[in-house]
Image 1 (cartoon, rainbow, N blue to C red):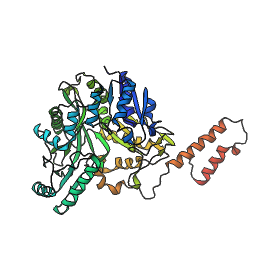
Image 2 (image 1 turned 120 degrees about the horizontal axis):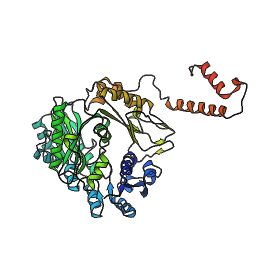
Image 3 (image 1 turned 180 degrees about the vertical axis):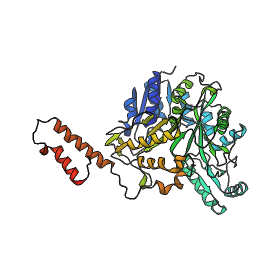
Length: 504
């Protein structure tokens, strides 16, 4: 049995994993960098260990330091979360060699599916549709030109070891092939240490739809239905929902069956995601497999009622899947917004700083996966995402209404966030109608800009409210005074009414 787990990650995903551990009676061990000493995941865990300086390479990406911490605290297993070392086959293999259970797939599976070219081959063999393109790495720019001509423009160049949009180039005409080929290879080498690239036909007006899968050590695999992830900026997801408003029942069943076939073809164990592109004619194609827990996993949990982290731990413990495909149903609708410390009006520049005031929304169907608190300083060294806001409701229309409400209630001051930007996304007619694809943000760029005359007044209003509360506390705790007009709060109220800044 797994009795103690080291979470080799930070931030909201570390806290989220530890919550499931707590419910299962499993002790958790946090690892942290010097920049994360006061992070909530450190405070929440049963035990904690500093593993290095602020830079990820010295801490969260340092395999030796993580393994040493695991030995020191006597853990049974290591959960990688997402990002950092979560899809690093070397790390997964090292965990096994050191006597720890790696809560994830076999390293051989990670290597096969992490290489986009070998993944394409595996999917073709399994009968899963793939986008027309190369099955081998491109060896020269001349070959790239020939392939592009044969499958027809537009085409997409992709890094074999890529992800997050790095090493990707859209090519619409032959004259651009040379420049884009060299640029894609250069970016792939700098980002992944491997400049291997391949080419696919570009799917126009695509929807990015993914299926959650679970597989055990005995060959059993199920899918937990779909997520629509088409609201993206530069290939980074911003808003996700489940189920997808674009696909119908028959297509959902067909895609789910192919997702299971894809996972079985590579002997998948644990929680993973099969990602598809679906064109406007409802033809779908395998895009890639993420061999880890996804950022957007909460919306699947909300609509199917399954704790994916608990399932990961059970599978890693050697238990067979207790879920049967015919028993898994979708109920209601869920939407997730990624809350980031970034300035959307300055090209989404990260906005680290100290949180002065934090008001999180509550109420029926509301969930927040986060790691911040008032007084916490967002470090400059890591991804700017500080949390995820998730809502569930019985219908998509009600879920949108709920998300609009909770985004209005969510207040963070002291730094700049993307909350107002997310409010505008939810209000775009195209989104409300469910008629959008991966070009949503660029097509609605004008709508998503701040309105004319807009100014960010949330922090001044918070200061005013805090000052009024301070004055009222003074009045409540001082000796009775007969001259009401002389009190500080009444002078403030009179001034506000005269200037028109307070209403009664």
